[in-house]
Length: 92
Image (cartoon, rainbow, N blue to C red):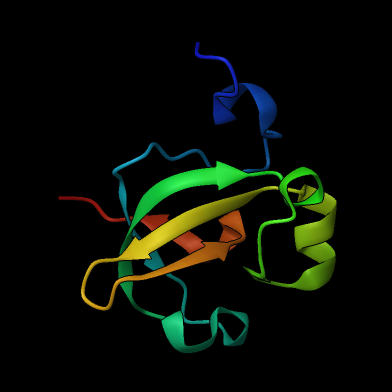
């Protein structure tokens, strides 16, 4: 595995994706205007260390998991951070 690979730093509770994976954002209020949209994984971070954000998701859960995925939306050029539980892999 690569250094800083999310598979080595994420807890078992954090769903694992790879850069370039297509994901759909859950239809939940904490997803805001991104609910139901499809984007591409561009990376990940530990918000407590990187100070990246804001992270879409339940604040208590985001803080306890301390893990966020960067999702890029090609149609608008937006890049946002999301808690893992708001993302689902898009299957071909």
